[in-house]
Image (cartoon, rainbow, N blue to C red; front, side, top):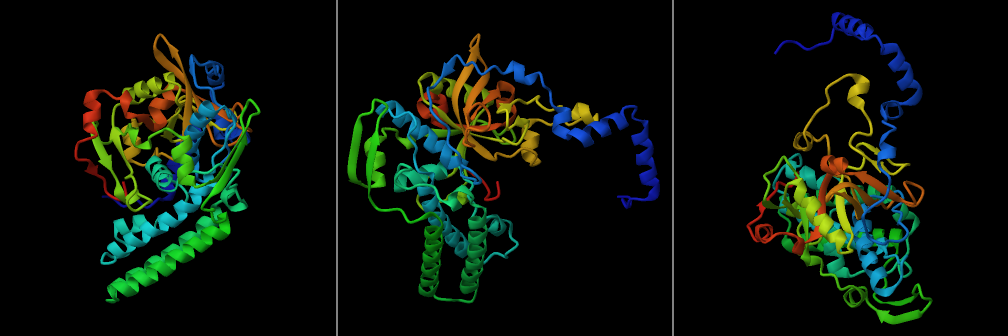
Length: 436
């Protein structure tokens, strides 16, 4: 390959080409004054998304995850609270995200220590080891991770375990946990490689886990083992249930069986009609594995529509940073025309974007409605967890073309799958590499 060092001759050629564009100066002034998105934005999109939905689940006020990466917890608890609201006539009931967040910190440290010990013989720059070290104290997560926490610890209403300054802004806690756990990981690796006894390693690990519990307790509070559930329903009727545990609360007040729900993924860079798991992404030892059934997009849409028609909302994962207007609450694949603005070809398929890290799932939200025209979806109603100051009181409208391009997975009851599709769930899953 020829030497690629840039020279003055290269710069002169670039300047010459730049000067040849007849609208270069006009475009430059517009972008510098208004920014890229405002210049590239298609203002006709807003008029096409009218926020009227032929199928819509009745829901209440949106939650607000504030400055935290807990959307995966919010989205699951949103679905649970909708079920509770419908069953017990409490429209704006709220479940505690902080409660599950606390236990996630402890469980995530526990499984991280296991991974550090198991991979101690590998060099620290090994790709698997680097994957575990990449944010062990972070607060992002997956559907299966949220389910594992609920199944083990139950849930609590926010009134019994409220938010704290730290849970509303998790960045400092994440920094502290990342530093602490990486140090702990180094110590455990060194102990294994120096021939320390299993007993000494186990004792050190136990000491480390107690430190993580203490950090999480200082930041979030330590959950009580029992609480009094006290509320008034929308008919002003008073209710109280004293001395109930979070697990008893979930089993008593929620009839949903979380094991009945499956992750339907649309990852075109992997083979369709196959079951995949990634145990390296799990957060609870012995809990549900992170995984998915990879299917064409029409399966995601068909199952989601069926579940919405039956009055049940849907957890879904997506790339919310792409082609979105946060303030207006608009998601449309043609919202910003960067290709036209810069006169360049930016075309990539969804699978190509996945493979080349251009589009990554970074947010979870809740589908609460869909507009069907001649039986086909045109737009979807989305409950976000960014508070009421964005979108329409916190609700977004998602064009169907955005679902095609940027929605990665939906969580649906497996009863909405065909018999043939359900049989795929019984196949031996493909185990993904830890970094996938």
